[in-house]
Length: 342
Ligand code: TYM
Image (cartoon, helix red, strand yellow):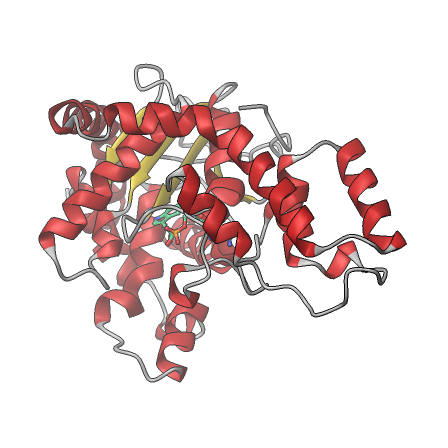
């Protein structure tokens, strides 16, 4: 993975940090289904790029998935899927920490402590909760409290930078708000993290042009078979401009995907073909499929080579969990000391 946008310099940590982290990258992904190209471009690829130059902690957010997933087998299955994804993409498990959120139960303790300083209004304004409520879908307390647990995820590791897609920006704002609030009440304790969002890939559109998302059923799976990948790309919605007429690459859903998997030169050549007319959408769909497949195929092979090796995948998660827990315990103790629980 090539490094993308450079990190902003971390905020100056408070004087109480004996060894302030220079930069510690952290992020998570929910095991709620097979990851899609939005997850890949918006999060996985930048996250893997950053891990080449910085210390990284990446985790499977299984506590968060419980807000919607009701089938234990499905939860286990998708957790292992994600372990296989990180393996396939080449995360160095010895150098970094990769773990299951629930293997560090301290995070729920910190979430409770943070809950006690979280104004309700802050959570009532959270998009994920508001949108679901507006659609008349089930809203449970876990979903309402989701941003507090997410803040705990980030703050319990003294994280400085959090690579995410744009849909997580508000959660990062809430995290910063809670960290500042805690530091204001109890003195410098928590590192105030920054989001790390790469503009180009902040929101990857799905088949219908809306944000690619499992809830819109408009996803292209990251490691579906080659045949399925082709089928999905062919389903991308286009307008009905006839072949001979000029078309606009900038408003085309196929081009929006193609550009992330091709060189500037190839993009310019296709953009010319759009504008001249005489190009059918079938042609660019084929080119987009080939471009995506070229990049993904080696990873897909590695993914399927390990996916059925459950003991190995569980071993990777356990090893990472043990390492992450050591960091979390230290930060939680610092917090407990401050609030009077120790
Ligand atoms: P999740 O599982 O929904 O998504 C994982 C990551 O993929 C990004 N993403 C996208 N980026 C660009 N375009 C898209 N269409 C697209 N769809 C998804 C998301 O922005 C995310 O970065 N709340 C988090 C999981 C989480 C977490 C955390 C993340 C729990 N605790 C602490 C960071 C730090 C989530 O539901 O991501």
